[in-house]
Image (tube, rainbow, N blue to C red):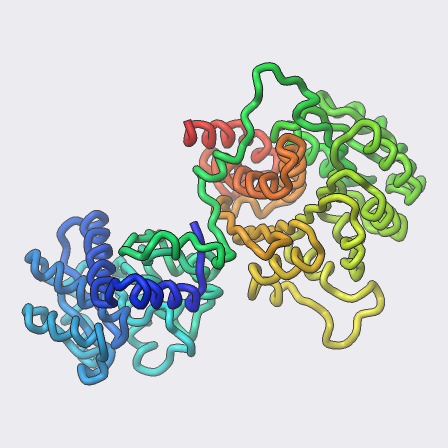
Length: 526
């Protein structure tokens, strides 16, 4: 399902009315009816107060109040503007609601005597402002919003909670905290990103008659991953296959004090379905690893004598890739040093096998993102926001004033950050976080809806690296590996959290839940 900005949704609305001949008043009727039906489904018969602004969002609210009133509900309306401020379709709906006997009160009544209205109602419908919000809410309107939030009543927001930016989920001065939101046609970016996602509550997307070709247009670059689509991407195992058909992954990870990162990444890689996994480790640590693996294989690599990789390991790795392995995953726990930076540069320039780069492998590229353009094979990078910020900064020790990139800069627009970097470097970028975004070199982005707060713990990123690498070995498709990987990773985390809760969740719990996550996806598509 596509995810849109306010401007993209307005264009869909414009084309629906102008090119397809479906009038705005019909869309408003359908929107109001969709919310009405959802309210009835969620609550049964209750008394409802609908708070309406003067625009189309308020027009939708007036339809809701009229529908419920006509069915015998007590459904009153509070308007935040004067009746003379209503225009167009919203004005028509105001006149119809009045003609049908809907009780309408000014906002002043709600603010001056809130108990006289709120105590008679069990649900509030927020239809004040929709996706067209462009400035912060203040003054009397902010007072109305705060009163709604203090009421203690469940709130159903129409299209998007009032005060939430449709494009980035930020609070614009003040915002309604909804228990449920019913949006129309397509979800908006503001529903997906925090704090907007938290204010949205449970999201429902209603079909109100927008043409399918407009909702699925390739001109809309952002998509929400859905379970059935992800399930369909997973390749099924052929009855007559063998381990070589599912990829041999060379996993370069770990250093002195960070052996766990390598072991978790490798185990997750196997759980994701890789046929073979060889862990490349500093040769001084090989005995430690050898005593802890079962299905994985070990290859010792030249190190600096302190349990970290030497730049000389590049030759061994390139030979191994040319003769035995299908792809390279590198970074978890390898540390950052001059040798690691040189190692990464050599591998990127010379490897003819695809690479998945994470953690310290990314940190070693600080200020050197242009080297990615010299890659001979496809590259997937999986940074968290901190690693992303370092990747976007100038060369180490040579930062110029005003050029530093902060985590806050990245979090303000995760989608644009992911798309822009992927396009500039010709890579696939998995920007981890809430939510995780996959950016592609052709300018598309995918939002992952799975995952939970319990996954904010050490090692979960190593697990994701292993899963994506294992899936790449199976699919040989970088985009599919990223999309299946992030969705499956979050789903496994959700399954683990359902059994153990958020507080005690650790990365190995996610690995243990990968089989259940696969079964869930397979059963969904059966």
